[in-house]
Length: 156
Image 1 (cartoon, helix red, strand yellow):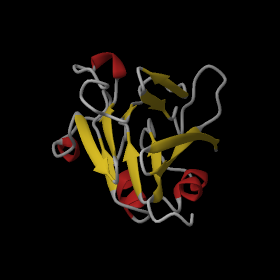
Image 2 (cartoon, rainbow, N blue to C red):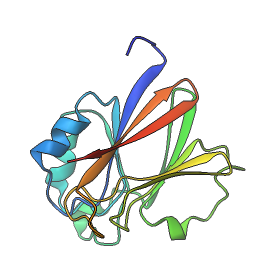
Image 3 (cartoon, helix red, strand yellow):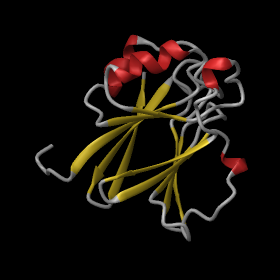
Image 4 (cartoon, rainbow, N blue to C red):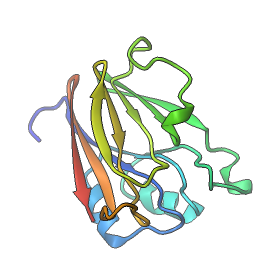
């Protein structure tokens, strides 16, 4: 990418303790990585941190002492964009558009989706290890250029 205001945010969710080589390869080159919950094991985050800084949120299956420092939701401001991250989008307790968020990133359903609502991009990368409804394992690469967001689903 030639634009100095352009970068990639890697988005992964629902790894449930496993991180495939294909997920690592897909996320290589990310400026930062968001894990939208159901991490499963702290080793997953350690492997992701080798690629780029990681911003995880706790999923409903993330239990135990290792999860105490992981928030239920997170706000990441990078460049000109503001991202709101939580595991289960049905638990959102704010209006993302009114709050000035560029995107809401979530997981939980194991079904990938990328859609715009009221000017806010809603991104679910699906599950990197346990997809449902005949979807392949997947991650999302979010290209950020100034305030423009372009999400690409990557099948693993």
